[in-house]
Amino acid sequence: MELCAHRGLSGQAPENSLSAFILAAEAGLPWVELDVQLSADGVPVVIHDESVDRCSDGHGRVRELSLAQLQSLDGGSWFDPAYAGEAIPTLADVLALCLRYPLKVNVELKAYASEDLPALCEAVAQVIEGLALPADCLLFSSFDTQALTLMQQRLPQVPRGQLWQKIPADPLPTLANLQAWSAHCDYRHLDAQLAQQIKQAGYRLHCYTPNDPAWLNQATAWGVDMLISDHPERFTH
Ligand code: G3P
Ligand code: MG
Image (cartoon, rainbow, N blue to C red):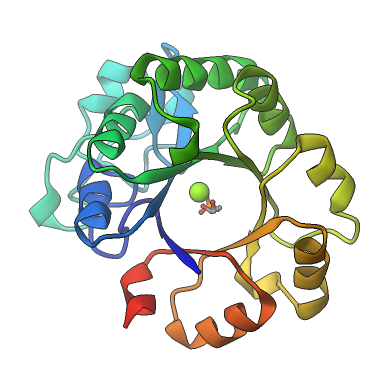
């Protein structure tokens, strides 16, 4: 079973910060997950929430702030004073770092405003092409099937995973249309029947965000392929 650090090693450093991705790499984890959305001036930035309020000292919606405004914020003190001044990174910053280590990256496309979707997908594709990132070190995921369809058209060689909170009763047409690699779900909503359906159809099964290693036996029994955790190091002991 593969381990993926959710928003970087977010149990130990501010989520989605360069420090969190560096810690994941130094811990020897094979995968990190990040959340990407667009700044007001069209730059893909790595931050989870629709607004900057929770994870910085600023206020407002990410899509209404320019890159310069976003990068003037303190994205670290909210987590721990030791991370004061940590910047909200661009996707290019994070992917360049991952390429150097190397570290495989699950890029979760966040489209809080659906009209931003085409621009987000195009900007993400351009960053990946600009860095000449190999497709086998990337995975796109999204709760938004349309985002994955756009990436399928734009960068078909990069694998895709459909995100659900709970896998729906009939997931296979969506996965087939996407030529998906994986189905991703909240581990709390998985059961034996849903897991079996995904696995028997030949897809990988990825679960977020188990943090208690006691779940490992259940995950193994259900054939889960990847755990996306805030504390992946707990699953290695
Ligand atoms: O990609 C798995 C997980 O990150 C999905 O939920 O809200 O943490 O982005 P969220
Ligand atoms: Mg995410």
